[in-house]
Image (tube, rainbow, N blue to C red; front, side, top):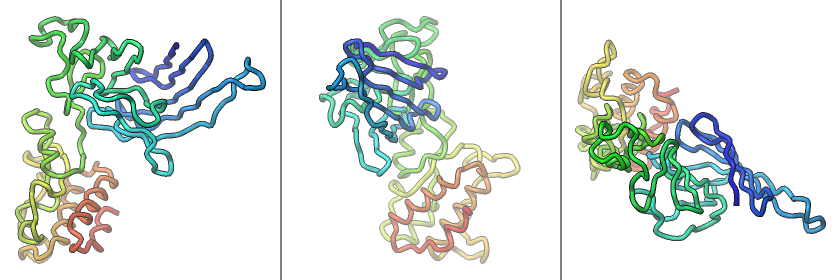
Length: 301
């Protein structure tokens, strides 16, 4: 088997696989930074009527769902059906079970910037090779002990950090992630990423307006500290007022509170994509069906 790569900067744009000296598949990959967005793959088989010719199969398109570390977790077809799922693996990427459904669709990526060589079991990590079984690089950091006490080590916490070039760790967590507060808080706590988990709606008020409200599972978004706990210039910080801006009285329903919080996010962080704010609204809808949101959808338009 032979594999060739066509690179677009530091990520592969095309992967061709040959078996028995004949083309077996062509895979095109589309990335957002280090994160896989989609792939198109086409398989080739010998023509039964003329073994010297190849029959080209249908081009298949799949869309990727990835972890914050860039690792593809699943692929879905254009109809939304899952066609591939990442087999269980250890914290540092070692497979714990054999390849599962449609293994031929596996894009071959582990963490961001890492490409698995099935034959050797090693991972190509741009400037160094990584062993997911040993959880370390095979060669030392080129800058020696300046890079840390262990020049062979991968990142200390692979759930939130990546090393796409095999040279230096960096955060794999992005602004504007939407999830439960406890999940987001766990991603950024103690990591000096400059990010905070922010409740929307505000937890201090929601607990009085929503039955059985749990701030740990409440809808939240990752935002820069600047604008959240530190003033963002003339924009200040997102409001934590317990009073309705129109009436000057305390909030009496969660609908108005969440509408205020969405407006505040838009005011302080005008670069937030509308899709992210929609995701935040929809998460509140799913969790608190007793809350009506007719006016909130207009806030982000």
